Amino acid sequence: MAQTAPTATPSRFAPPGRVTARPRAGAVGSLAPSVWRELALIVLFYTAYTLTRLILVQDGTGPAFTHADQILAFERSLGIDVELGLNRMLLEVPWLARAANVFYATAHFAVTLGVVVWVYRRHPAHYRWLRTGIMTATGAALLGFWLYPLAPPRFLEHEGFVDPVTALHSMGLYASDASGTLTNQYAAMPSMHAGWALWCGFVLVRLAARRWVRALGVVYPATTVAVILATANHYVLDAVAGIALTAAALYASWLLYRRTRPERTRRAETVETAVAERRAEAQLHAKARRRGRSAPGRRTDGDTCGTNPDTGDTGDTPLHSGKSARAR
Image (cartoon, rainbow, N blue to C red):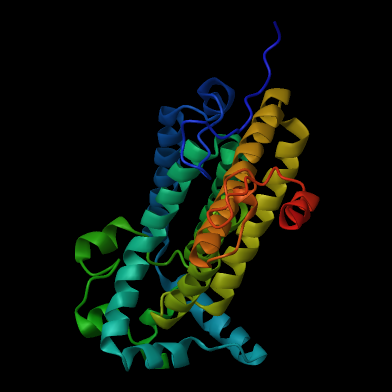
């Protein structure tokens, strides 16, 4: 007998408005690649990142500061050199500056990793092309770090920039000598803080069912760009380049995915989409029932098969029967 894809129907044992059906593990879960394979890719990319730092040390940091002067001069010619103003505004509010330092040091990795795991577990049908998109952008960024090392604004004290981490002695990504030696502090162009934040926001807006989660998908990239500029870790052009690179990589990955994805992936996506739509529909019905209970005398769609507590009407009696009853 041919097997059909499971449909998302409410269980008669479940509370009203709750959807209990999920795609079968064999139908969707098998679409995600091996965890060990994904960890190996992470190790590979971190090794490449480390090599760019070692190459920079051998060549010296002179080109990085030359490029910084070029970037600032170009931004000033365009009138978009807002980094210094944002840096000064941030330092006027010490508690906000400390929070920005912590955000810069932690959110870039924690949020991105959390979204990756969420997509892997909850939306495996979309995992491969989304992962390919962010890794393609990161690989191209590594090439940029190597070919165009760039000193961040916080190194340009002669321009008036102040590093809020050292000025406030607060937690930060480069607060200690150990963290500074383990990272490439001249890997500013393009900004993958901005690029990864855009990726996270895109994923949440596209796949999340709850509105507040989708709203976070809009707020998070905007907050990240404001933080990387105000903390003097990146230039405006860094952020623009990181966002453009990530957007292009996602688009290319999606086009390739649509052309090459197997039939079983398309079927799994259909099931996953149906479950998500059914879940959203159930949430809307639940909200409608709650509004109906909070307003006496109002009936919602979910009460059409129930008994009206005021009249005892079950909803199955024809309208004219009410007139007949009154006539009698």
